[in-house]
Image 1 (cartoon, rainbow, N blue to C red):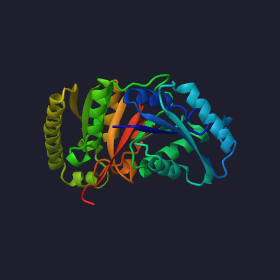
Image 2: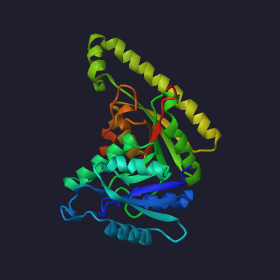
Image 3: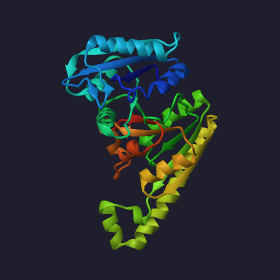
Image 4: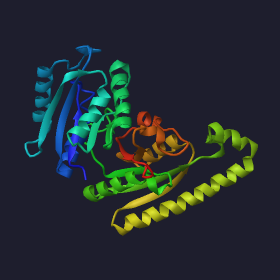
Length: 301
Protein backbone atom coordinates (compact mmCIF):
# COMPACT_ATOMS: atom_id res chain seq x y z
CA UNK A 1 0.00 0.00 0.00
CA UNK A 2 1.77 3.17 1.21
CA UNK A 3 5.39 2.49 2.13
CA UNK A 4 6.99 5.93 1.91
CA UNK A 5 5.49 9.23 3.09
CA UNK A 6 6.89 12.59 1.96
CA UNK A 7 6.24 15.56 4.27
CA UNK A 8 7.18 19.05 2.97
CA UNK A 9 8.10 21.53 5.74
CA UNK A 10 9.10 25.19 5.61
CA UNK A 11 9.88 25.88 9.28
CA UNK A 12 6.43 27.19 10.23
CA UNK A 13 3.90 25.73 12.67
CA UNK A 14 1.34 25.78 9.84
CA UNK A 15 3.42 23.40 7.75
CA UNK A 16 3.80 21.09 10.77
CA UNK A 17 0.03 20.47 10.95
CA UNK A 18 0.33 17.17 9.00
CA UNK A 19 2.96 15.65 11.33
CA UNK A 20 0.45 13.81 13.57
CA UNK A 21 -1.08 12.24 10.44
CA UNK A 22 2.35 11.22 9.14
CA UNK A 23 3.19 9.69 12.52
CA UNK A 24 -0.09 7.74 12.68
CA UNK A 25 0.20 6.41 9.13
CA UNK A 26 3.89 5.54 9.48
CA UNK A 27 3.10 3.41 12.51
CA UNK A 28 -0.04 1.80 11.08
CA UNK A 29 1.41 1.16 7.61
CA UNK A 30 5.01 0.46 8.72
CA UNK A 31 6.07 3.18 6.31
CA UNK A 32 9.23 5.24 5.96
CA UNK A 33 8.99 9.04 6.29
CA UNK A 34 11.03 11.66 4.46
CA UNK A 35 10.91 15.24 5.71
CA UNK A 36 11.81 17.61 2.89
CA UNK A 37 12.50 21.29 2.39
CA UNK A 38 13.17 23.04 -0.91
CA UNK A 39 15.02 26.34 -0.72
CA UNK A 40 12.74 28.86 -2.39
CA UNK A 41 14.27 31.53 -4.60
CA UNK A 42 13.92 34.99 -3.09
CA UNK A 43 12.04 33.76 -0.01
CA UNK A 44 11.94 36.15 2.98
CA UNK A 45 13.31 34.95 6.33
CA UNK A 46 9.97 35.64 7.99
CA UNK A 47 6.36 35.96 6.88
CA UNK A 48 4.12 37.78 9.38
CA UNK A 49 6.55 36.88 12.14
CA UNK A 50 6.68 33.18 11.24
CA UNK A 51 9.98 31.49 10.55
CA UNK A 52 10.78 30.59 6.94
CA UNK A 53 13.80 28.45 6.14
CA UNK A 54 16.16 30.08 3.65
CA UNK A 55 19.51 28.31 4.19
CA UNK A 56 20.59 24.70 3.76
CA UNK A 57 22.28 24.34 7.16
CA UNK A 58 19.37 25.91 8.99
CA UNK A 59 16.91 23.74 7.06
CA UNK A 60 18.89 20.56 7.72
CA UNK A 61 19.09 21.28 11.44
CA UNK A 62 15.36 22.05 11.59
CA UNK A 63 14.35 18.85 9.79
CA UNK A 64 16.61 16.80 12.08
CA UNK A 65 15.03 18.45 15.14
CA UNK A 66 11.51 17.67 13.87
CA UNK A 67 12.45 14.07 13.17
CA UNK A 68 13.75 13.63 16.73
CA UNK A 69 10.86 15.52 18.33
CA UNK A 70 7.94 13.90 16.50
CA UNK A 71 8.94 10.38 15.48
CA UNK A 72 9.91 7.48 17.70
CA UNK A 73 13.13 5.52 17.00
CA UNK A 74 11.20 2.57 15.55
CA UNK A 75 10.00 4.69 12.61
CA UNK A 76 12.55 5.15 9.80
CA UNK A 77 12.83 8.88 9.10
CA UNK A 78 15.07 10.58 6.57
CA UNK A 79 15.56 14.28 5.88
CA UNK A 80 16.26 15.93 2.56
CA UNK A 81 17.10 19.55 1.77
CA UNK A 82 17.04 20.59 -1.88
CA UNK A 83 19.95 23.01 -1.74
CA UNK A 84 19.50 24.62 -5.15
CA UNK A 85 16.99 27.44 -5.05
CA UNK A 86 13.74 26.75 -6.90
CA UNK A 87 11.14 29.10 -8.32
CA UNK A 88 8.31 26.56 -8.26
CA UNK A 89 8.12 24.93 -4.85
CA UNK A 90 5.07 22.82 -5.73
CA UNK A 91 6.76 21.33 -8.78
CA UNK A 92 9.86 20.61 -6.72
CA UNK A 93 7.77 18.73 -4.13
CA UNK A 94 6.01 16.67 -6.79
CA UNK A 95 9.28 15.85 -8.58
CA UNK A 96 11.02 14.88 -5.34
CA UNK A 97 8.15 12.55 -4.45
CA UNK A 98 8.73 10.72 -7.71
CA UNK A 99 12.53 10.76 -7.49
CA UNK A 100 12.61 9.56 -3.88
CA UNK A 101 9.99 6.88 -4.46
CA UNK A 102 7.40 8.35 -2.09
CA UNK A 103 3.91 6.96 -2.61
CA UNK A 104 2.06 9.57 -0.54
CA UNK A 105 2.60 13.30 0.03
CA UNK A 106 1.32 14.60 3.38
CA UNK A 107 0.98 18.38 3.65
CA UNK A 108 -1.03 21.28 4.99
CA UNK A 109 -3.91 22.36 2.77
CA UNK A 110 -4.49 26.01 3.69
CA UNK A 111 -4.21 28.55 6.44
CA UNK A 112 -6.74 30.59 8.34
CA UNK A 113 -6.00 33.76 6.47
CA UNK A 114 -2.97 35.98 6.04
CA UNK A 115 -0.11 35.74 3.60
CA UNK A 116 1.34 32.56 5.09
CA UNK A 117 -1.95 30.70 4.71
CA UNK A 118 -2.41 31.96 1.17
CA UNK A 119 1.08 30.93 0.09
CA UNK A 120 0.94 27.46 1.58
CA UNK A 121 -2.60 26.90 0.32
CA UNK A 122 -1.56 27.87 -3.19
CA UNK A 123 1.36 25.43 -3.10
CA UNK A 124 -0.87 22.61 -1.83
CA UNK A 125 -3.35 23.16 -4.66
CA UNK A 126 -0.55 23.10 -7.21
CA UNK A 127 0.94 19.90 -5.78
CA UNK A 128 -2.41 18.09 -6.16
CA UNK A 129 -2.34 18.88 -9.86
CA UNK A 130 1.30 17.90 -10.42
CA UNK A 131 1.89 14.84 -8.24
CA UNK A 132 1.51 11.29 -9.48
CA UNK A 133 1.23 10.01 -5.90
CA UNK A 134 -1.82 10.45 -3.63
CA UNK A 135 -1.79 13.68 -1.62
CA UNK A 136 -3.12 13.85 1.94
CA UNK A 137 -4.15 17.43 2.71
CA UNK A 138 -4.48 18.40 6.37
CA UNK A 139 -6.45 21.55 7.28
CA UNK A 140 -4.72 23.38 10.16
CA UNK A 141 -6.30 22.49 13.50
CA UNK A 142 -8.21 19.52 12.07
CA UNK A 143 -6.17 16.81 13.80
CA UNK A 144 -4.80 18.59 16.88
CA UNK A 145 -2.25 16.31 18.50
CA UNK A 146 -3.70 13.16 16.95
CA UNK A 147 -4.97 11.76 13.65
CA UNK A 148 -7.49 9.01 13.04
CA UNK A 149 -9.23 7.38 10.11
CA UNK A 150 -12.01 5.49 11.86
CA UNK A 151 -14.81 7.02 9.77
CA UNK A 152 -14.03 7.72 6.13
CA UNK A 153 -16.33 9.38 3.61
CA UNK A 154 -15.82 8.37 -0.03
CA UNK A 155 -17.58 10.55 -2.64
CA UNK A 156 -18.33 8.71 -5.89
CA UNK A 157 -19.66 9.77 -9.29
CA UNK A 158 -21.05 6.47 -10.60
CA UNK A 159 -18.22 5.83 -13.06
CA UNK A 160 -16.32 2.60 -12.24
CA UNK A 161 -13.23 4.10 -13.89
CA UNK A 162 -13.09 6.69 -11.09
CA UNK A 163 -13.15 4.26 -8.16
CA UNK A 164 -9.46 4.33 -7.28
CA UNK A 165 -10.30 6.44 -4.23
CA UNK A 166 -12.70 3.72 -3.05
CA UNK A 167 -10.04 1.04 -3.57
CA UNK A 168 -7.56 2.95 -1.40
CA UNK A 169 -10.23 3.71 1.22
CA UNK A 170 -11.15 0.04 1.44
CA UNK A 171 -7.51 -0.91 2.00
CA UNK A 172 -7.19 1.72 4.74
CA UNK A 173 -10.45 0.52 6.30
CA UNK A 174 -9.06 -3.01 6.55
CA UNK A 175 -5.85 -1.79 8.16
CA UNK A 176 -7.52 0.65 10.57
CA UNK A 177 -10.72 -1.31 11.23
CA UNK A 178 -12.59 1.74 9.99
CA UNK A 179 -16.09 2.41 8.69
CA UNK A 180 -16.68 3.62 5.14
CA UNK A 181 -19.51 5.97 4.23
CA UNK A 182 -20.12 6.24 0.49
CA UNK A 183 -21.94 9.26 -0.89
CA UNK A 184 -23.14 10.39 -4.31
CA UNK A 185 -24.47 13.89 -4.96
CA UNK A 186 -27.29 14.43 -7.45
CA UNK A 187 -28.34 17.97 -8.31
CA UNK A 188 -31.77 19.37 -7.73
CA UNK A 189 -33.37 21.64 -10.31
CA UNK A 190 -32.34 24.70 -8.29
CA UNK A 191 -28.68 23.69 -7.91
CA UNK A 192 -27.97 23.15 -11.60
CA UNK A 193 -25.53 25.68 -13.04
CA UNK A 194 -24.11 26.83 -16.35
CA UNK A 195 -25.38 25.14 -19.51
CA UNK A 196 -27.34 22.58 -17.51
CA UNK A 197 -29.30 25.32 -15.75
CA UNK A 198 -30.00 27.07 -19.05
CA UNK A 199 -31.29 23.84 -20.61
CA UNK A 200 -33.37 23.06 -17.53
CA UNK A 201 -35.30 26.32 -17.89
CA UNK A 202 -36.48 25.21 -21.32
CA UNK A 203 -37.63 21.78 -20.09
CA UNK A 204 -38.17 22.03 -16.33
CA UNK A 205 -40.47 19.03 -16.04
CA UNK A 206 -38.23 16.77 -18.08
CA UNK A 207 -35.17 17.94 -16.16
CA UNK A 208 -36.71 17.14 -12.78
CA UNK A 209 -37.75 13.69 -14.02
CA UNK A 210 -34.24 13.00 -15.32
CA UNK A 211 -32.68 14.07 -12.02
CA UNK A 212 -35.00 11.68 -10.18
CA UNK A 213 -33.86 8.90 -12.52
CA UNK A 214 -30.24 9.82 -11.80
CA UNK A 215 -30.99 9.44 -8.11
CA UNK A 216 -32.42 5.96 -8.64
CA UNK A 217 -29.40 4.96 -10.74
CA UNK A 218 -27.09 6.32 -8.03
CA UNK A 219 -28.81 4.24 -5.36
CA UNK A 220 -28.48 1.12 -7.50
CA UNK A 221 -24.80 1.84 -8.12
CA UNK A 222 -24.11 2.36 -4.42
CA UNK A 223 -25.91 -0.85 -3.46
CA UNK A 224 -23.56 -2.76 -5.76
CA UNK A 225 -20.49 -1.11 -4.21
CA UNK A 226 -21.81 -1.89 -0.71
CA UNK A 227 -22.29 -5.54 -1.62
CA UNK A 228 -18.64 -5.82 -2.66
CA UNK A 229 -17.39 -4.08 0.49
CA UNK A 230 -19.52 -6.19 2.82
CA UNK A 231 -18.26 -9.33 1.07
CA UNK A 232 -14.74 -8.22 2.05
CA UNK A 233 -15.82 -7.81 5.66
CA UNK A 234 -15.71 -4.00 5.56
CA UNK A 235 -18.26 -2.03 7.54
CA UNK A 236 -19.86 0.42 5.10
CA UNK A 237 -22.96 2.50 4.48
CA UNK A 238 -24.08 4.50 1.45
CA UNK A 239 -26.36 7.44 0.75
CA UNK A 240 -27.43 9.66 -2.13
CA UNK A 241 -27.64 13.36 -1.31
CA UNK A 242 -29.52 15.89 -3.42
CA UNK A 243 -28.03 19.31 -3.98
CA UNK A 244 -24.86 21.06 -5.07
CA UNK A 245 -22.04 18.52 -4.89
CA UNK A 246 -19.50 20.27 -2.66
CA UNK A 247 -22.10 21.41 -0.12
CA UNK A 248 -23.73 17.99 -0.11
CA UNK A 249 -20.43 16.20 0.56
CA UNK A 250 -19.24 18.63 3.24
CA UNK A 251 -22.60 18.41 5.05
CA UNK A 252 -22.64 14.61 4.76
CA UNK A 253 -19.11 14.33 6.18
CA UNK A 254 -19.97 16.64 9.05
CA UNK A 255 -23.13 14.70 9.92
CA UNK A 256 -21.28 11.38 9.68
CA UNK A 257 -18.61 12.76 12.04
CA UNK A 258 -16.03 11.58 9.54
CA UNK A 259 -12.32 12.07 10.14
CA UNK A 260 -11.13 11.56 6.54
CA UNK A 261 -12.41 12.24 3.02
CA UNK A 262 -11.04 10.00 0.25
CA UNK A 263 -11.69 10.68 -3.41
CA UNK A 264 -10.25 10.11 -6.85
CA UNK A 265 -8.95 12.93 -9.02
CA UNK A 266 -7.70 12.88 -12.59
CA UNK A 267 -3.92 13.13 -12.78
CA UNK A 268 -2.35 16.43 -13.88
CA UNK A 269 -5.58 18.38 -13.36
CA UNK A 270 -6.17 18.11 -9.63
CA UNK A 271 -9.67 18.66 -8.33
CA UNK A 272 -10.98 20.24 -11.54
CA UNK A 273 -11.56 16.88 -13.25
CA UNK A 274 -13.43 15.12 -10.46
CA UNK A 275 -16.99 14.59 -11.63
CA UNK A 276 -17.72 15.29 -15.26
CA UNK A 277 -19.13 18.77 -15.71
CA UNK A 278 -18.39 19.85 -12.15
CA UNK A 279 -15.54 21.86 -10.66
CA UNK A 280 -14.77 21.07 -7.04
CA UNK A 281 -11.59 22.81 -5.93
CA UNK A 282 -13.85 24.42 -3.31
CA UNK A 283 -13.89 21.12 -1.47
CA UNK A 284 -10.26 21.56 -0.43
CA UNK A 285 -11.01 24.94 1.12
CA UNK A 286 -14.36 24.00 2.65
CA UNK A 287 -13.53 20.57 4.03
CA UNK A 288 -13.05 20.65 7.80
CA UNK A 289 -11.28 17.29 7.91
CA UNK A 290 -8.24 15.75 6.17
CA UNK A 291 -8.69 15.02 2.48
CA UNK A 292 -6.87 12.21 0.63
CA UNK A 293 -6.73 12.82 -3.11
CA UNK A 294 -5.99 9.70 -5.15
CA UNK A 295 -4.92 10.18 -8.81
CA UNK A 296 -7.14 8.51 -11.38
CA UNK A 297 -5.51 7.93 -14.75
CA UNK A 298 -7.40 7.75 -18.01
CA UNK A 299 -6.95 4.12 -19.11
CA UNK A 300 -7.81 5.06 -22.71
CA UNK A 301 -4.59 7.03 -23.08
